[in-house]
Image (cartoon, rainbow, N blue to C red):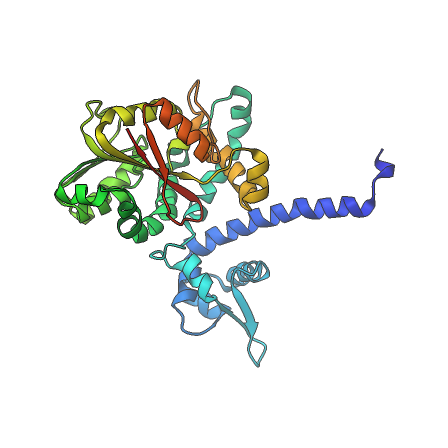
Length: 362
């Protein structure tokens, strides 16, 4: 049968496969650029830098920086040019400065690259997961995994949660200003909870997470922010109240990661007042693989990350639901919310490249 194959078709398929390897290797180089401060140094320079200058400022060996720079330039991540004497010069485009080096910008993109070594380390354990069916939770990625999640989501949240997202919820800001009881489910490093607590001092915000590394980060951030009306707890020790006492519950990018999302939705319903609000934020997904594959240019990335992280977490116990990264499209979220006892479900007009935002009410 191999004699019938078109040699050019084989070469093209091989090229396709190795472009994926190029992306993986270049991702490792992006991790190094962030970790070593190379992007930040380039961003802080008012003019293109020589390789030896860049290396000297960061106390790095110039030959290693040179090879890294050639990868980055060939991949079109950094700008490469030569001066009149033929000396190589490196710089970042304006877009590169934002995505690679500006941690305050909503478009900052280094979070997932920060935790890349931990994500790729999961490959050592995944063969057994494929055999047993059991994945590994987020703490298997260690403390740097928690920092990576923090750096992934907080820049956008810091810029948009207070001026854009909360005002989109009917009556939420007024309630928070008057003094509300709030729970932030899957609070991670606590950025959103601290933002709300600081902006609305009459309200009380409790962040819930099962990651000890995330809770440690949240505790440090709370101390730095000096907010008395915010606390962080492990729900296995201090569960969500089941007495309809909460005004607002938020859940950012976490329901699809949970082993028992239906039970969590039911617990959220039991925690909310009859006029309470649940802000559900989760990955934009469509109903079928075909729709995701044709309409989401990042579908292959998301399915792969799901295997290494999201679905793995969601199947980290026996009977885990295993929704995965693209496992909670709007239709499923609506149906699951209805089954949990919610009667109103509204998609918010919040523009985000990855997430969908929903207002859910009893």
